[in-house]
Length: 97
Image (cartoon, rainbow, N blue to C red):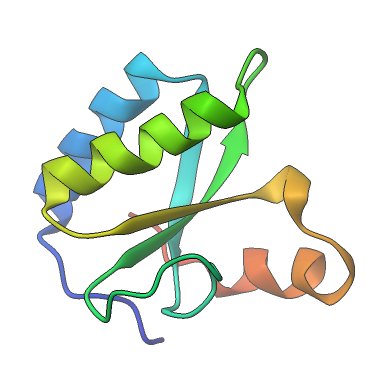
C-alpha cells in the first residue's frame, strides 16, 4: 500500500479529537491518490463514515482541522459517496489507523 508514514499513536489522538468535534467516523487510511482533491505528495487520505447531521461545510472543516493538526493536506472520502467500482474496492484498500 502506498500510505504515508505517520506516527500512529499521534494520528489516533488527532482522529479522536476530530471525531468528537464533527459527526464523522474515520475508518482508516486510503492509498495516495484515492481522494481526487488531495494534490500534496505528503497528503493523507482517509475513508470515513458520516454520522447524522454531517454537512458539506463540516466535512470540509474536518479536513482542514485534521490537516492543521497533522501538518499535511488531508482528504476525507465518505463511504456513502462511493459508487460502482470504488464502493467495492476502497473498503478493501483501507489500512486501519
